[in-house]
Image (cartoon, rainbow over all chains, first blue to last red; front, top):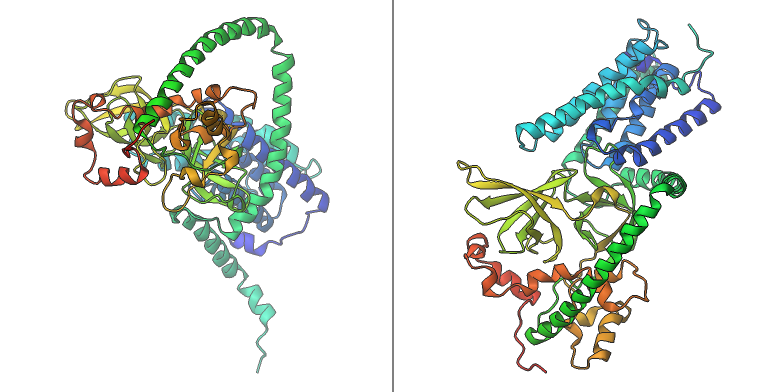
Length: 174
Length: 380
């Protein structure tokens, strides 16, 4: 939080980058809205915006990234209508984790990208699993939910570099 | 003495202020989990109204692309599909003929008994904008809201059966909680023997009929309909079919899996049943004239027919914008199974006294205002 508070909102963010990020975010949101719920197996229903938030965390200043993550999290929560705060929390945490660990890891390395997105997706999956487990259900049903969430996490890890790549600025090489 | 500098003070307190703002924002968002369903607040409304439009436009683009692929790439299966459809049409035509006969018979019996229709309510057609974004919860967004007269807790149906009810309302959009959501509960009865239970959501593919005692007779394939006693859904709407039954000798209740009749994952249009006043039903006199041309044509064809003798689901079937060229019996034949609970109220249909066991004593007083069995002194 101290890091976010000490950061500035706008340095390094040009109008072009804002437009590009907005369009890309909207594109992923539309994909999330029209493609993901149609998938036949719950295990395939990944969250496409977590990798986006990773990229935002890498490219944007901390405070702007957190605000951006909060906004899109609220949008997704709003269209989901249940478990308010799940997406706001997970996206914000993703941006914060990226900023906190940015000095230790080279986030351009796909392995690190997959690792952190996997961690965030795992956290989100655990939260969803706990929420769904509030309703008493049999062991097979519960197992199938948790198994689905596990596969979802693995799938998020796999697709992360492909979703992050369009957002990374090639000029920001270390 | 040093002057108190607001700018310096704000800079020093920046971290604390930001923490305060973030915590407040998160507490507000988290508090939305515990609110009662109502009209959305300003923030939710603004997000819904703003983001729905691009999502809708992109959705149309996706649909047209999907249609393109279906039309041109999957053509190879068209011939076989055409043959099977022709066979199906022939079979359905014969079935429609028998349904027409049953419909006419039903009308006659209805006039004789002077049954009032209980679900004769005004409906609002709406289009599905988006399903739950995560795919893990069972909600969807429709393009009708507060401005169109939608309020929370209004039942949402289509010609196949019940979809859910309105959870939250924005100005032009509403959020619908599907019957398959774990937070959904519908007062339901087995159409065959009137055994009553609570239909709760299980997952995207099914529901659970709860609180049915182990010794009560439920069979696979039984149709589950709304009982009309939960204050949300009118009586007699189709919910689903009993898919599997699990009886545990040590358990007081049996576990009944119900498969919804509506394909909830492929919804495009829905009907929202508008409540009128305190009750769910609308009296025949209150209905607009445009909403009952079928009833009028029935009366013209048979002067003995009384205006309130139409089937309960006629407006629901009509509001789906069926082609006007179709004969009235075809339009209503689809909704005929919904009439069964009303026509099967003879004593033979509940021989084991299960309804008496299940229903509370106030059932009679509740069913009476709906006018299900009002005797008529004179029958033509």
